[in-house]
Length: 66
Image 1 (cartoon, rainbow, N blue to C red):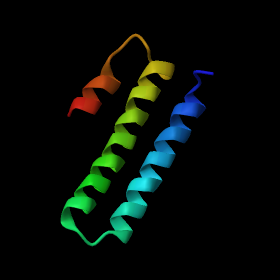
Image 2: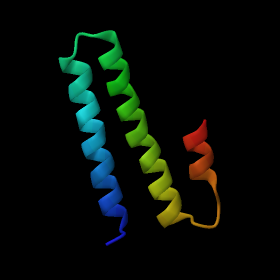
Image 3: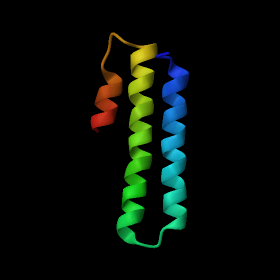
Image 4: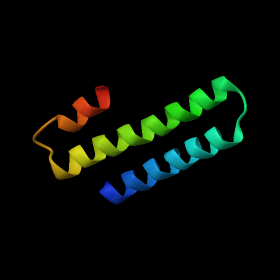
């Protein structure tokens, strides 16, 4: 159940929700929250690829922080 595909699917759903939020909202705060959702989806991708493709290094965690 813990596969890379599951994490990528969740990240794609989060990113699409954020993209729809950026396109549909007119409030600046709502747009910023939607952008933050998109950035969280990208961070989830970094962490998932780090866990499944290179578990011995922590480069995905470093990319997520910066």
